[in-house]
Length: 336
Image (cartoon, rainbow, N blue to C red; front, top):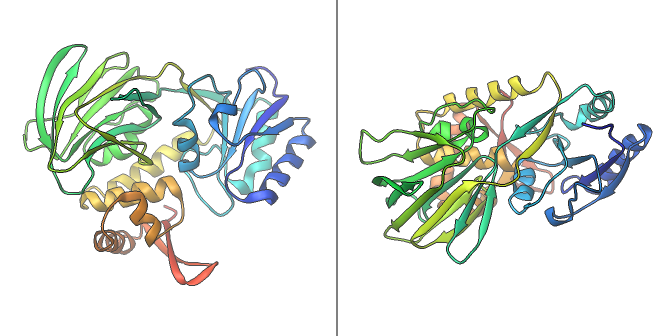
């Protein structure tokens, strides 16, 4: 990677103070910066690096609509929030900038996938694309086809197509394997299949994966990275995206991030799917209220309350005061 001279900044969290502080530090190290507010304004010709200050959800949401080349991403977690994708937290941000200026980093190339839904809509994902019923606890029937060959028909809670990066996320919590991030493969994991012999399937990442003949008692949805939902009628095609995502990594941070994620997943392996889903949403979005969890998960409040009670008793989620409204509570993943 060439010497860093210019950076594009995406700062959806923390407001003006965070942006001003970041710009001051970059100027101190001779890095010119410019702001952008959506993925269609990122240009590989304009900068050497993309710096994002936000939660994992902010990062993944931005990448879902980015089709072209994106300069290597240096992800910084917002003040007082811990994230899994970030290269450095806000408190150590200046140290991180100094290290990338000195070249003390590596660039990790991460596979993305995209879902092509009826009507021509395309959505991208860095972790996984999942097929579920729009209402929880209802079965989905579908047929799996790979490169034109019929593989199986299944009746299950759903199915997940995961990248190597996503193999330590939601996919692992429902029985998927851990995959090296350098491996050129994808994982297809049935979720609670009625067929006890149904297992995760590993395929080359250039495979053409089709989920078709989709049927359920209610509408079905494609969920990308646990963030956005799209209605799907009968068919969706999942492929490796044309452009990968390049993440700037400081040399000593990646293995610790994976260790924390795996420990978190092991703690919830015997919990109901609703608790695992609530934990994933908190992992992606940071601090959330009960109303926000209801909106993002689509689960009834009584189900969310039960999931939170299990997670807080296990010490995986903390309940904290909302500084803007003392009558409301926020929930966030505990440090592990």
